[in-house]
Length: 296
View 1 (cartoon, rainbow, N blue to C red):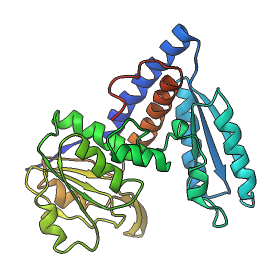
View 2: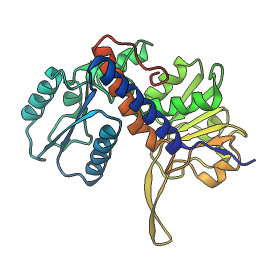
View 3: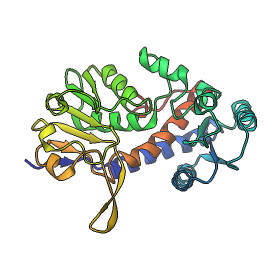
């Protein structure tokens, strides 16, 4: 068996095109342009790349992009004051504070200062609670992207056994909640799960988000299962740096029915879903119908 490759890059392009069409319609019919504000504190190289990509993608779909770059020494009071201004700005529909923050800043405090309706990362405690109780919320981008791809591949997910390897607040836990919402039977596993391979082999859907390079090998995978690899790890191999996922791709692809590659799988969906969340937040702020197929 050779697994079908789930092309996240192509899927994300389709999501961005759908967002761009909806944004153009909003502008034409309502005179409204969705706006995304991104706050970057410090000079973390990876964060700078992410912010640059987010800005380019936001502009590409016709939204307004507001970048705020602050010194690494910025005080918590100054950062919270900026968040308060963005909360009050009607032109800003989505606010994203790029993580990680410098060590002297309390990430939880800052994230929970964002207006939950503008929390397009879905990290605010109110959105976490709403998602956990099956209510309308802003959904974290990476799990939302995974859900979109799974729905596209399977159609209905009802009754499927899903195993999520990883229990982070950013991916593992919200992913499990989304799968429950689509009527899967869900197991959350992690690095300390006893006989992890046997647990994973029970999965029709296996989501790897544990943060360990190539930890999930082919003998963890049920024949024909769908494998979603959220991990992105930089390793040295043959004297060269390369990106790999949490799944050992070659061995897993030989067993799985479908699999996401790294790179080019889940990664592109994260920014696409950030744009989708910003559009959703804008529609909700103005009491307009939300775009179909772009929310959980």
